[in-house]
Amino acid sequence: MIKIANKQIDNNSKTFFIAEIGINHNGSIKNAEKLIKECKKAGADAVKFQKRTIEKVYSLDELMKPRDSVFGKTNGDLKRGLEFSKTDYQKIDKICKDLDIIWFASCWDIESVDFMEDMNIPCYKIASASLTDKDLLNYTKNTNKPIILSTGMSTEDEIERATRIIGEDKLIILHCTSSYPCAIDELNLSYIHKLKEKYKCPIGYSGHEVGLSTTLAAVAMGAKVVERHVTLDRSLWGSDQSASIEPVGLNKLIRDIKAFEQALGDGKKIVYDTEKPILEKLRKINTI
Image (cartoon, rainbow, N blue to C red; front, side):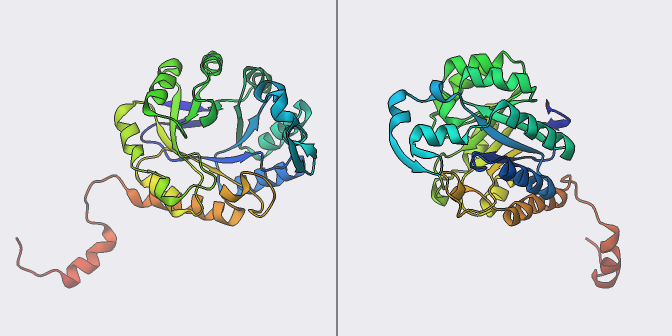
């Protein structure tokens, strides 16, 4: 059993739903607050952001590449414009505490882990892009907090090595395909079963597809943690917007997950009281 803030996650728990705000706030605290409120209203358990130390994650050449955006003319202008400051995250922390919703972040470098340790977040996410970053895995493990590991664009051997470094005691593994948006025939949901057979820790699903039904299918296949990107409007600029779900879709997805969990039952066959009048009316007298 793994505990994130006040939520317990194991193979018998309800689905833990992470609404991935990521960088879909487009550098605006107002947008971030709107998204947090929509996620809370929909019933998400947590919201997640992304934290990078720009000069550590990207090379100077990469930052200098031309790229038009609302922040300027280079890729560096864009990357810096999307990063929230400590003051910004203090505001996010207050918003989430006031709304009673968990928040945390994907940290892309060691300095960002230190940054988030100062914010005292309850767990960490290792993004698929960072799965092979041995130093980051070890450093994050040393926080002694739960780690959620996404496995997109990774081989089985790479997943095994990352899992050995982190250990399974405080680990949640998310099946993932890192295409934005992801084609339906590349979701490979059956790999959830393989992960459940191979690892003792909770297994979940991080989806980047268009639509909701396949994410619900992942829950039916045993995903105990679900992560989906969320946005205020899929037509907004930004690399993750098209693979995100809007508030209406978010409400529907969480509603349907809860309905599935309620419908699943305990697997024991009984005759319900509501069936008995029908039984008396329609069942033939001769018995088997």
